[in-house]
Image 1 (cartoon, rainbow, N blue to C red):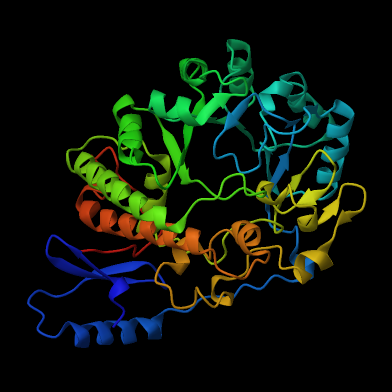
Image 2: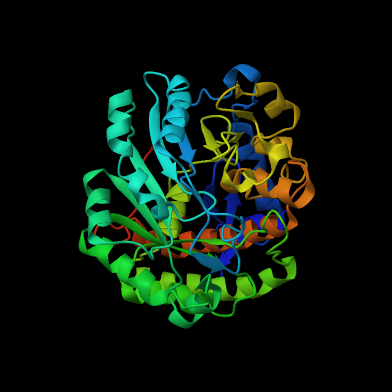
Amino acid sequence: MDKNKIYTVNKEKYLFFEDDLEIIKFPDNVENINDVFEEMTQEKNLLVTHSYYKLEKNKIGTDKNKVISINLTNGCNLKCSYCFIEAFSGKMQLLTEKELIQKLEFSNNNISKNDRVALYFSGSGEPLMNFKLLKKIPAICKKMGIKPSYYEINTNGTLITDEIAIFFKENNFVVNVSIDAIEKQHNATRKYINGKDSYDDVFKGLSILLKHKLNVACKTVIVPESKTTFETLRTYEKKKLPYVFDIATPSVEDYYVPQVKDLDVFNDEFKKTIDYLINKSKKGEKIYSLKIMNDLSKIHNRQIKQIGCNACLGSFYIGQDDNLYPCLYLSDSKEASVGSVEKGIDKDKIIRNNLYAKHVNDYNNCKTCHIKYLCGGGCFAIKYIENGNTDTVSEYLCKYYKIYWDNLIRMYIEIYPFITDINNLNHIAYEQNNAISCN
């Protein structure tokens, strides 16, 4: 019996089926839980089948959901302690209009008529340091016949003005502002290059975006050893700020290297966070964590994830050097380049060097994992950074995923009666028939 699949909530036991994310409560007064477990598992195994995904050369770049990531700025005005690309180091370089057009022309040649395209601005620095170019992009796209469904930008928030916010509003931008909710913590890890605190400037920028009612989210990075994770996330909830979060990951050049053992601290902190959010939902209070609500919806609607990401299927990162990379994480590694704007996509190298996310069952460490269809095998870029290849598991991320998803499953079971209540502020609608039943 796989004990990882059994969750005890309020003294009742539930069985989680990883193949379709269904959760079923064990009958009351079960004398032999092993027999019931085996019976339920065998019955489920007869019913659930999955299509098998395998990346072939002719599929590279063909996904209909295209994400084109363009680096506007090399360099940053902040020096964050956990920056995975060390954006503050090196000479400041701003992308020129001519260089941008060349990148967009390449992208346009790889866009089909029915593709849904998003333009994403992040990279090796703060993109708003090149706002002069950014504000020209919608007009340039229109002239070139590129019709993005939306634009998205990651910013540290220090440079936001009313002019920038109005531009975002008029051009359908999704804006992620990197900020830590607790001022003291933010100023300890996200200082200006000159050592000055940045929190006041970031919060001022965030306030401008909220004033203009933009599609905005606070974006925070959780340092695993931090004993303030719970307080940080609770602060967002109390301030009623929409937010997303992720765990800090290793930088390419070992500037920041998180430790697996520190995830034990995160585990304790995250359990407290989930308990707090469970209580909020039961009281009918809105949960502001966009990430958690989105992932609860995935469980609720059995949205299995067979591959970790869309890199090289429909998305590429274009560096200022005109080289193509699977994603931003690998943009500092020339060995991970998968082509160039001039020469095109090197499809043979992508497959030869496994620079894409395989089906989760192609990873030996994932085949028997009970959360494999929730994490999809994880981030192949972090595997590459840690191990020099994309097949060896990241012990750090693997442990993080299990902590995160086990707590989400527990939360889902606990608040199931509330999120299925249409009057609850955290109501999750069914997106398909026969979704999970916990009763």
